[in-house]
Length: 419
Image 1 (cartoon, rainbow, N blue to C red):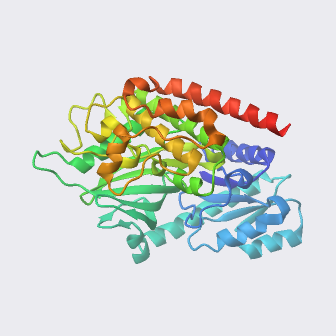
Image 2: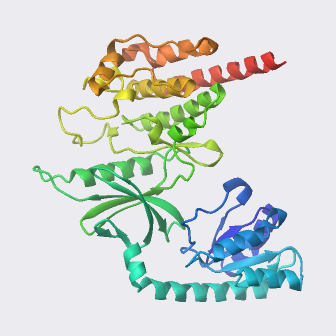
Image 3: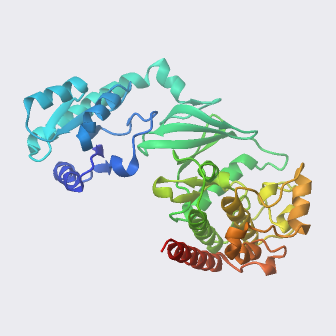
C-alpha cells in the first residue's frame, strides 16, 4: 500500500499512519502538508500511489483541493477526511469527487481499510486499461526513446546533447526531471554521453548531502541513456535573483553553496561549472547543487572532456580554468565568489562582448569594488576572487566559516541600525 496523505495536522497524520500500518506494516505513507509544501504540481497525477487521503485543510480549502485533484484525468482515487460526522458534508465531498469519506477524529478502522482496498482495486484497474491505450504509449516517449515507468509531462529544455523533460515517476511517486541523450560511441569505442551520465549518477549517489541534488535512476532505453533526478518547482538561483536578494539572503545562499562544494571536495570531486543556473531551490529556500556533467573525480581513469577544449561558463570560470590549467578545489571557490558578487550587486564582476575577453579579464582585471553600502564585505569578495589559487581560501570549510561570520556581523549591524 502506497498512500499520499494531504493533511496539515500532525496528530491526524499520525492517526492515519497508525490505522494504515496496523493493516499493512510495510505501507509507505508520504505526507504532504500544504502549508509547508504548497499545492501539488499541475502535471502530477499521483499514479504511483494506491490512493490519496485528503483532509479538509484550513478555511475549508479541502473541498477546493478535492474538486481540482479529482478533475485531473487519471488522478488516483481520493478519500476525504471530514471534520465531523455530517451527512451534508459527506454529500458535498462525494459530489466534489471523493471515492469515500471518513471522519477525521473518529476513524472507523475496518471501514477505512475497506475503502483503501477498494480504491487500490479501482486505481489498478484504471491504470491497467490506461497503459494499453495509445495515449499511454505516447506518454512514455521521450524524443526517440520509449521509457516505461515514466509519464511525460512536458519538455523542459533541449540542448545540443541532451533533452530535459518533466515526467511523473510511478516508482518515486513524484515529478522528476528526466535527462535523456542518444548513446553513441566515439572513435576510441567510448560512449561519451553514457560515461558522463554514469559519472553524474555516481557522484550524486556517493555524495549524500542536503545541498546536493537527489538522483533516482540511471538507465538505457532504445539506444538512449537517461537519468531521473529531483524536480525543483521553485526554479533556480537565477530566477530567485531576479526577484531581488538582500545581502543577508545572498550570504545565506553562499553558505549553502559552500557546504555543498565542501561535500564534493571531501570526496575528491570538482564541480567545474558552478553558476546560478546550476543552483536549484527547494522549499524554504534550501539550495541543491546540480549538473555534474563537467565534474572531475580524482579517481577517474580517463578524462571525459575533449583534450585541448575549455569547458564551463566563461563568466564564472577561475583564471586557471579559463586558461586550461590544472584545477583544484580553489577553482570552484573562485566561481562561488563570482556568484556571491552577482547576488550582492545584481551584476557579474566581468562583462565583455566575447567569451575570450571575459576569460582575459578574470586573469588580468582588478577585482571589482562593491557599492559603498557593502564595503564591509569587500575583503571576503577579494579573497574569493584572488587571481592566483594561493590568494584564496584553502578549502570550502574556511569559506563557510568566513561567510557565517560575515552574515552574523551583517545581521547584528542591521539590528543596531534599526535600534
